[in-house]
Image (cartoon, rainbow, N blue to C red; front, side, top):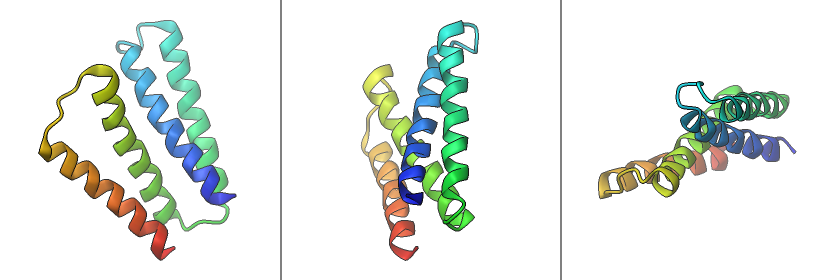
Length: 104
């Protein structure tokens, strides 16, 4: 279950950043509330995963899921730039996350 909690936490991190972008500097109420709720749930599920997983592994994977996922959300929903450099570095993040999972 720890790995499932960690994946949920990473997805919560992604959603928190997505809603934070929509909140326009926390000036819009609904997206701001969703950002805070998503962030809180992300921390909650991360804390559950830490009962069984090493902190370095869990934190690395959590931030990796959040970072790579947020870049992809930015490309899909906010028309952020897509180029080979961004794709390469997102691939590096994903490769690192997979590597941490394999050695854990």
